[in-house]
Image (tube, rainbow, N blue to C red; front, top):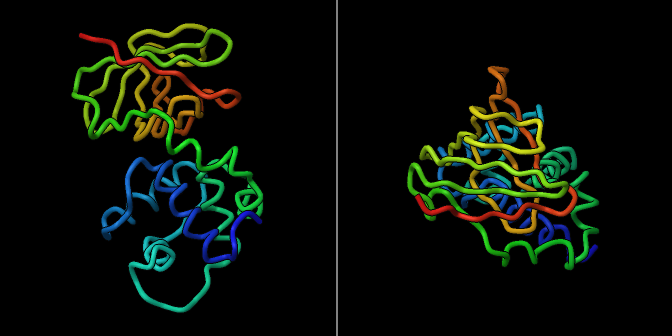
Length: 190
């Protein structure tokens, strides 16, 4: 374990979850959003009240169950809590320092972003506001023009998580692009 103790690992896991979510979790409504995102991404649920206890928003001295920590680690793109704890610093926290786009602060509605990943895959997306995007051009991917999705954070060189992806009028799902070597993005001037 690269952490001194379990409490330190849980603090780091909370940070990894917030990075995936794209914003810090500090209010009851944000815990509700995180609960919903975890359910949509993993198909399993953690209640907002449990999340509040893990984040220290609600005081108690109860340690989170391993199954809860495993689910948080899965949401943060790890196999389980043990693999999160075993991940080296080289593969872990460096991504936080990489260039990134936070749609809430870095993009205006109608801005275009070109996202590329291995195998000459690329999508050109238009930001619709509130971290929602629509694909306006695609190449070498299963995604299609007109597909919509939410993405709260795009980190250069890391996988991108497309939440609430509506592909060909299907039910919303989660889709990951750039699993192998991450994605590279470019904001296109209108």
